[in-house]
Amino acid sequence: MEWIRQKLDKISEPFGKGKKYEKYAPAVNAIDTFLFTPNHTTKKGAHIRDAVDLKRVMITVVIALIPALLFGMWNAGYQYYSQLGEAFTFWDALGHGALKIVPMIVVSYAVGLGIEFAFAIFRGHDVNEGYLVTGLLIPMIMPIDLPLWMLALSVVFAVLIGKEAFGGTGMNILNPALTARAFAFFAYPTYMSGNKVWVSEASNVEAVSGETILGSLAAGDDVSHSMWDMFYGVIPGSVAETSTLFILAGALLLILTKVGNWRIILSGFIGAAVMALIFNALPSLGVAGNELTNFYWVNHLLIGGLAFGIVFMATDPVSAAQTLKGMWIYGFLIGFFSIMIRVFNPAYPEGVMLAILLMNVFAPTIDHYVIQANIKRRRKRIKTATGQVKTAV
Image (cartoon, rainbow, N blue to C red; front, side, top):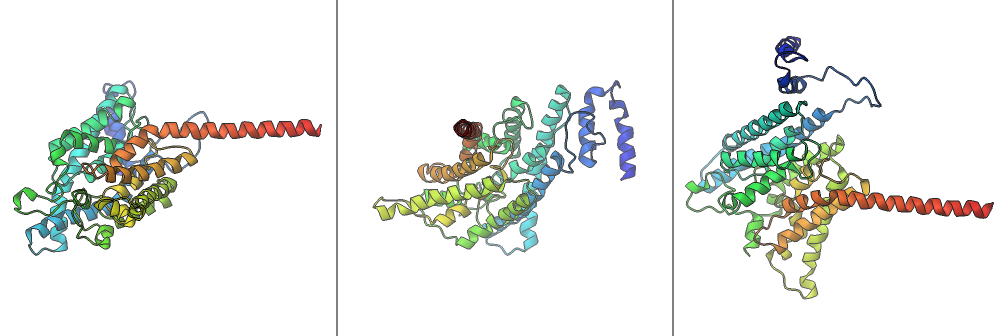
């Protein structure tokens, strides 16, 4: 490591303060800080000594995503070979999925980081580590065969409009990864829905039964998958959203490291369960339902992007609520609206993306009213205490 340190110091010399290429220093510093801990500290002002920094937080989230990513690679190959009816091994399935997904990850990082570097140089500040997570999340929530140029355009839109337009990392009001998916969904709907987009190379197969469970339910069809299939994730869907098991494994890591807020995660699932239970109760009240309303409430928590969205995107500290009570309200409403959109909008049965983006917009409002309520309670206590003191005197 010392050899690498010396090489980097030598390379960065022309980019130092007052040197010829000082303008491009943020690009070189980004590589340096990615490999090593920054060698400078604060000189004045109040600060806290802590081993946790933005880079460590982002890397923790990336590690938490790896189980779902690896399973998504295997599942992509499994769905492909299953449609062909051919015999295959675990490594065949994993290899096929990797050949599809790795290029998506490369394009996402190349395009996104390229824009990040350009803005850092233009604005004269260091490159932030925020895109380390966003760059991996975007391909993980896309269909397996989305053309790479569409993925690249989605990344450009997410970084420019969803992030840099607001000032960069820490200033965006919408989750950048979901902004990319929303752009792809509304700009290229035929590539984001249907029974073929979820199975690799489905256009080469005559009969593809790769519709998602939500798509089948919205069409009024029965679901052939068991609850355990839904929990393990051996079903069609976006690259890494199908396995609730591996998503919960990532959630456990985020909660134990205190990177992801457990209040948002728990309240998100509670909100979804409450809405699903309400719909399940409709037949007993004499209200006619459909396949989505009659779908068992537990299964609603296992399918679609609900679990992945709540764990990895609703907990985004930048776009989520900041107050403790606000986090409970924010998470609950995300889960609640996700199931509501699923049932009431059969044309778009997956509601978690819209629910999270909606609550991203209202998160500051939630925090505002929580803070105002706290202020009113404190004023009331002060007024009561002052009256008691006057009475005692």
